[in-house]
Length: 276
Image (cartoon, rainbow, N blue to C red; front, side, top):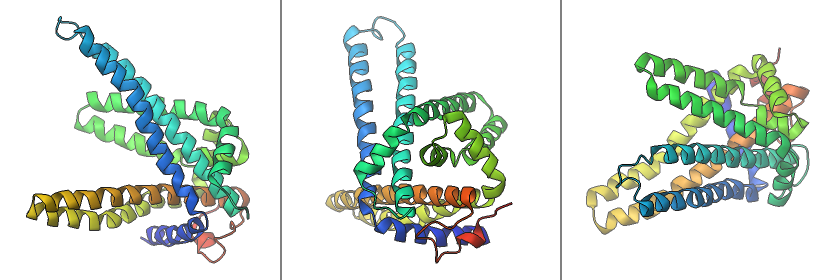
């Protein structure tokens, strides 16, 4: 519980850092819009082609086509997610190093690290697809094991993107660097996931209350409730995504340099991050 409370305290410090560069909140929004655009470009032609060709009506199996497009979509989502996470880390690193980041400078830094981010996106996307495929074919015990493997993978790779963006690692060397730092940061790494998860849970409570209240009234009230809740939930996701990137960056900088990043000077960073 001590580490989780420390994580929540550090999330507050991360927010203080993020408030100086609120324009970086635009990056998760751009990531979402890019994802919608790519999915639209992939799936509308695919579904339209299947429908107009009459493949299903003629007894054909469109499943193979859907699987291929599904895999391409998953890879595209992984690439978009990793790239914009890299841009967030780049912006956070610039601020924590005493600079004044902009959306343009953050995107530019991520683009300059594309040779590392792109292979990493493909690697982590492939691992995700494999784990999902095994999970769908496994029994309850198998799913439990796969979930544990997935959690271990996420923990071991928590600092890969900062390693690529900050120290110009490649995908494989970034994975090795993240795994090597795991023995120093595993406690805060895991606590960060639990802590940010708790923050997200608490943050969505107002939206849940609004939906339940307006749902009970029904009709126009429910529509108003949805119109209020959806933008609020989107804002929560955007803020938590940005906070997580700031936290990742601060953790990586402290783990690799032993120095408290600018902006975290008054925090309990030094006491809560375990260094061996």
